[in-house]
Length: 167
Image 1 (cartoon, rainbow, N blue to C red):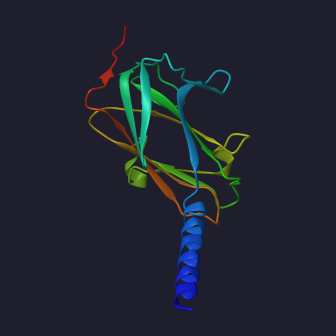
Image 2 (image 1 turned 90 degrees about the horizontal axis):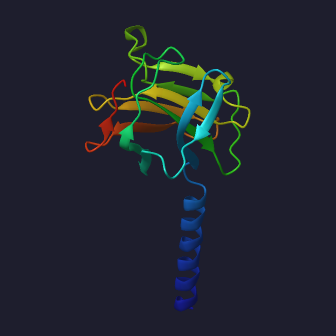
Image 3 (image 1 turned 90 degrees about the vertical axis):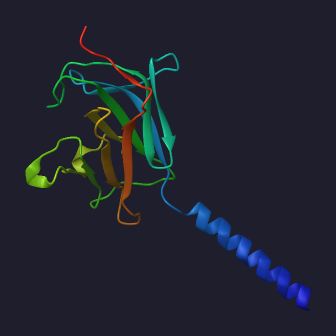
């Protein structure tokens, strides 16, 4: 009888562990690319790109040679990157969807810009365009819907990365 109770308890603990892992924080697909303001399109980088994005938990690390770009979407010319955040696991943004970023150091908002559900793409993803430097990390906070906690990502430039300059 003790063995049966022990096995039952172990099985229950194992099932709970799988449930917690399976229902934990929402999964998000994160893709590095470029953004064309003229036609409002995002294009994912290919494997032969000169720069890449490595995800380490909620830290996103830019590596390689990050291109210099003309200003876009109110961002001054510089090393500009576009990142697409797409919720997975059937997560549907709702009226509580919110996005906050530190990609514009506005002293009136303590450096945070706030966006709402209207900033999402038709597929529910967020296209985030920001300038980067080795001096300052950039953060983005996403709350997909009322059922999930806010997730904070930190974008950093690897110490070995090169920031391209104007041609």
